[in-house]
Length: 102
Image 1 (tube, rainbow, N blue to C red):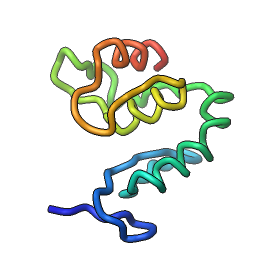
Image 2: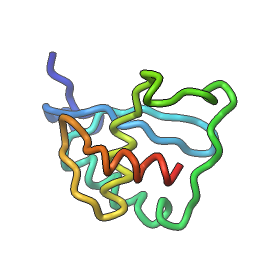
Image 3: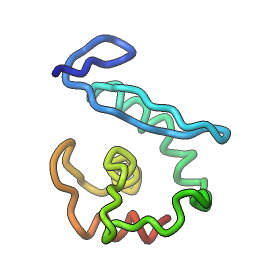
């Protein structure tokens, strides 16, 4: 299955989730458009703070098998200036930093 960028139709896109004003959005973006989004959001992410998790997700943990949103982890890591691969496993160190920032 080939996923195409929702903005320009380019191939090899990946799912990106983001929230604004209490609404969560999902879009498929290729490398170039994902980079544009990350650069546009970077100053707001840096100045903002994480909102508390909703009560419906409380108690979920990685050790319990609940997967992290890897797109969000990668975006957060990049915004913090960390190197993270586009695909595949995310290092335990980056996952720990992501969890600590939440």
